[in-house]
Image (tube, rainbow, N blue to C red):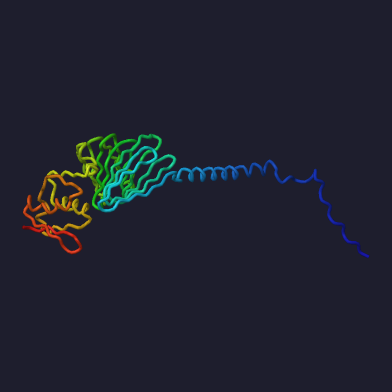
Length: 267
C-alpha cells in the first residue's frame, strides 16, 4: 500500500532568516522618523494654537466697560462694541467686529498683540492706542509707543504702516486706501471721559455720532445740510440735548419720527 509522504521539517532555528534584519531595520528607519516627526509637529501645532485664555466682550447702547487682562493689558470698550480676546503661547490676539475700544497693552516682545478687524490688522508689543471700526472705515489713533497697521493683511505685499504717538490712520476696508491722521493726546480715546470734541465737523458726521450714542437713526433730508460744519463739545450722556440744540447754531429743524428715530430738515 502507498505510504503518505512525510511532512516537511521546519528548518532549525539557527538556519531561519530573522524577521528583524539589518536591511529591514534600515527600510523602517525613515518611516519611524517620519512618524515621530509628524507626532511632534502635531503636538507642537496643538500647543501653539490652543488658547490659554479666552474672553468674549460686548457692550450695548449707552454702555461702557473696562476690562483688565491677565498680562496687565487693559481694554476699554465704548458703546455697541464687540471683541474676542485669545491668548496663545506665543501671541495675543483680539478680533474686533464692531464699535470702538481703547487698548493699553503690556509690553512683551515674545508675544505680539494683534487686533484684527475685517481684513485689517494692528500689531503692537506695548503701547496705548484707540481703534474704531465701522462698515465704511477703520480708524487707529496712537497715544503712546508705536503701532504697525496692515490695511489689508490678505495682501502681504502691500506696505505696513508704522504709526507713532500723536499720529493715526483712517482706512477704507473695502479698498485698503488710507489717509494719515494727526491727533493730540487729548483726542485719543477721549470718549472715555464722557466727552467728545467736534472741530469744524460736518453735520453728517455729527449726526452719525449722535445716532451711535442715542441708539437711533438720524436722517438728514436735504443733502445740502450734510456739509454744514459745527464746533463744540458733546457730553455722551446728553446726546439728545445736543441734537435738540442744533437749531441754535445751524439753520435746521430737528424732529422725532416713528420708532424713536430723528430727522433733520432745513428750517
